[in-house]
Image (cartoon, rainbow over all chains, first blue to last red):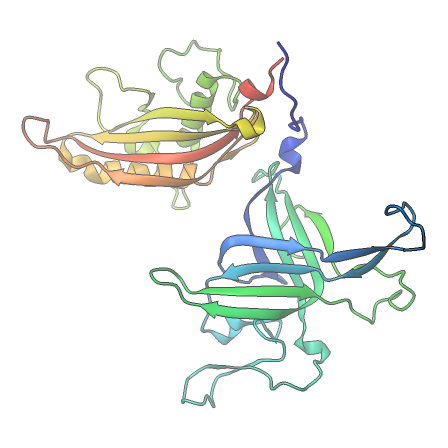
Length: 205
Length: 164
C-alpha cells in the first residue's frame, strides 16, 4: 500500500495561520470585521524586453512597483471620537476631523472629512497598521502571531453598504505609504513599505 | 488528571492526542473538564465529571453530558484533513435542573469555540449550533430537560497523517 502524496509535514502547525485575523492601528483594535482580512503586496515585475526574446529570462526581472494593500469589511463605526481616531488621525479618511460640536445638523459628534485639493500632511497618515493572524503553534503559555505591518498608511477607499437583516458593511482598503524620509529611499536601497513579522505578543514593540 | 472515560484502560490514554479516535474523544473530554471560564466557572460545578462518550451509564446521576463525534475526511487533502461535528448533549432530570443544563452548555460553548489543540496533530473548533430540546409530555418522561450542541471542528489528526 502506498500513502498519498501530501504537503503535510511535522512543521505544519508552526506554519499554518488561523481564523480571520484582526486589524490593529498601533495597539488599538480597528474594529470588528466580517469575512476576514486580505493582504496583497501589489508587486509588479517587468522582464526587460529585447528584439528576438523568446521567453521571460532569468536575471532580467525588475521589481517595478509595490502597492501593498490590506482590505476587509468592518462592521463597526464607533460613535466616540477616541474610537474613530487612532493616534490623532482619522481612521476612515486621511485628514478628517472628529468634531465634538459644530455639526451641520447640531449633532453632538460629527465626522468631518477634509475638503479635496489639499496635499496631505505627515499627521494625516495612519501609523503602524497591522493585520495580525494567529499561528497554529500558538498556546497561551507561548503566544505566536504573524502580522503584516505598514509603518505608514492611509485608507484610500471605503464605502458603506447597508444590508437587509445584517450589520452595515464598511469595506475599506488600507494602502501602505513609503516614508520618503527613510534612509535609502532615493537610491532604491531602502526597505519596502511593509513587512511580514513573527510576534510573540499582540502589543506593538 | 480528570477521570477516564468509561471502558478506557488506565494508562492507555496519553492526552492530549489525536493518535486514535479514543484519544480524540479523551482529548475533547479532558478539554471540557479542565476548562475554567473567565468568571471562574468549570463544568465540574455543573455536572461533576459526568461527561460520557456516546451514552451515559444506566441509572445515571443527572445532569450529565454525552459526546458523540461524526467525522468526514476530505478528498481535497488526500484524507489528511477531516471535518467533524461533535454532538454534545446535556441532560437533566427533574426539569428544575434546566438552569444547570443551560449553564453547563454555556461552559461547553466557551471551551469548544475557543479550542485549538496542537500538541499532537491539530484540532480546531470555532462554531456551533445549539438547541434546547423540546420538553416531552406523556407518555415520554416529561421531567427530562436537555440541550444539544453541534460543534464544527477541523482536524489534522495523527491517526490520518501518519499513514504508511
